[in-house]
Image 1: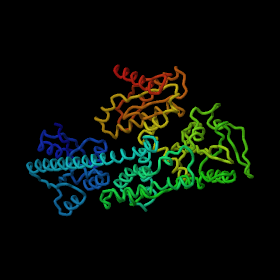
Image 2: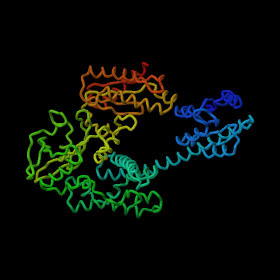
Image 3: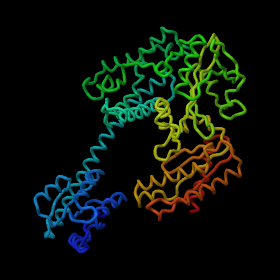
Image 4: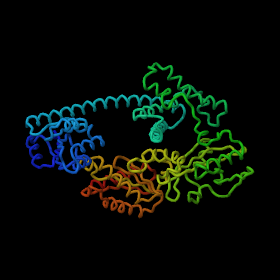
Length: 552
């Protein structure tokens, strides 16, 4: 059984040795000669179980330490026993007010010290077990609730022929938006628990579709005005389903679902009308479209009409004439031939919104394509905007909010690499890649166990940064697992591909972590060049990577 670790904070070496001798060999000890060293030890994640704190110390005294522990929230997790020659009531009161667990005056009795330290550790240990037990119970209950919500919402998705990831996307985006909302206004005082609950309940946003006729729900072509009215009723139907459910209508779950805060169910907002200002379904002449484009260009850098069949960009004159510019739509992305994944052709085929990501001059752009019937001819409206973090400047507030969803949803918040969700959603785009590499940090668990997860996170950020710099902005880095990365190279010669391995290894080896110069980082890499499919390439690269690991 591991020993409890005690941090003895006293500027007198004799007092440090005396306390260690009294408490004996049942504990591990750390020592601090002043308050600054106390905070430093905690920030290094030294796994401290209790602090024995003197009041009179240089640089930062005991009271200042207690204040810092409160500010940094350490006081909630680690008990502090003040041991001091100061017997004044004012000193004792102030120590307790600042969060001290106990106060022992010098000269002290050895038995008193032994039992107070032992009892304090026992109380905190039991308290942590109780908190953990409650957290586990809450977690299991929330997991069960979320599972039931997701099962039901997935049934709705299957009826509506939607992808299985739709509900997850809605929950994730809801969570992101609510966190941004509380940052920019205090109108909605949402706690983390509120945000978690609303995000979970957002999975029920389409529950009312179960009452929409199949002929309307899955109609392959555009809905009539009457059918659209019926479709919009699904939110009201969802509200009615919950209203008559055999559930206490006053519990937090039901109140939130039906109206508290966000009105997750029971209110319909036409997103297309809000974002585009003009309902695209109602546009039937070129003058309307010209006004729409001028409006959109005040927000988005790229807005255009495309003839998806010919891959030509069109313009509209002041008199409303449609002019063929003879410019190919793919030229803007630096290509000489049509895109393998053409969002405009897909939008034309599906008669709905289609999105993709493109790269231009090292910057990533989100492209939104929407079918448009104009003068009885089929066209596509294209909107594109940058989603790189460097482009999201405060002065571009509207575009920032639009970009935020793409950045946060497909970027890993720690490493800034793409997430597994990006791999799943854009797999078709990545299938034609020349090569892929799987990279795994060597002995990463030992770094976490020895230095703590905060240091491990710092290491991952540095490693991700040097890999991205080495592979270049035209290629893709995905955080594939905890300390695993997947690098996808769209176009690369075989020799250059394997030379990248050496460059990546050297770059990772050269990383020096501030305050932890003794940590040496290494990485194992496995690759696959010109495989028949992405799945096969990943399997092969995984095999090669573990072959290399066995050589270490």
